[in-house]
Length: 138
Ligand SMILES: [Fe+2]
Ligand SMILES: [Fe+2]
Image (cartoon, rainbow, N blue to C red; front, side):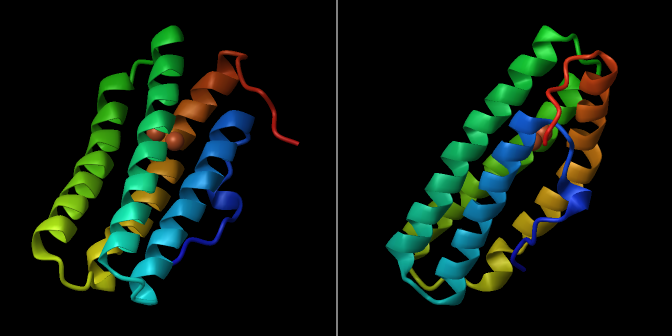
């Protein structure tokens, strides 16, 4: 269900944490639009907003990884692609079917977000910290 920000999602990297907070808010906005049955166009708009922000954030992470020769770059980008593909598929489904979107359809977001931040993104933030390129959050 809705994502509650907590310490397990905090990576002590100011820029990444800021982006992740926005992503969590956009996921929650999408949940709300589905849960409150705001209608097809509102759900599609919320999904597009999340897709566009996620793509920009992933581009930022990719640039950082490339700059610092991060060894897990390919695997990490594969996880990003899963989310982008799911969101694009969701938009296509909404546009094709036109019916109400069920909450079960968007529940993968919560799992993907928590698993990616606690796993792949946490490892990347630790790598940056070790490389001495971490901006420290307040
Ligand atoms: Fe991230
Ligand atoms: Fe990531």
